Image (tube, rainbow, N blue to C red; front, side, top):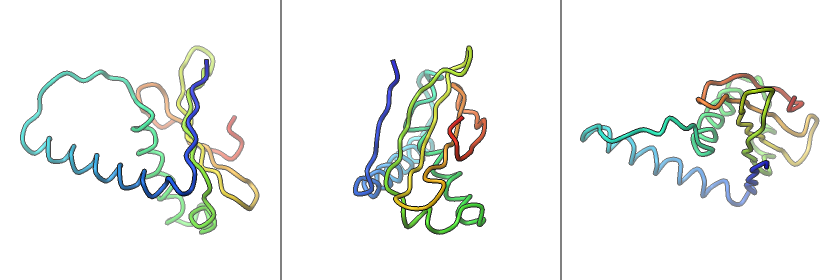
Length: 120
């Protein structure tokens, strides 16, 4: 079963706020001590955070033009199987322009495995 979540443009501001808040909480917790167990599972939220950093870097370095920032319409995070391996795909879709989407891929442990415009 494929697990897909779609985020619309009006929700992106809320998501950015949540990501910043989570970052602040994680930094604060890290500053006061480190303990507990870690599941080792790379989550959709973690994939979204890492993909957003890479996406922003692609725009700031001129690899993606400004329309990818101003025309962004939705972001989708999904799981898929690639052979024997589970993969998490983060898709950034813009309203206009060709290609319409850029895809960023991570393996199950959170390692960046590539990006492209086809999703393949």
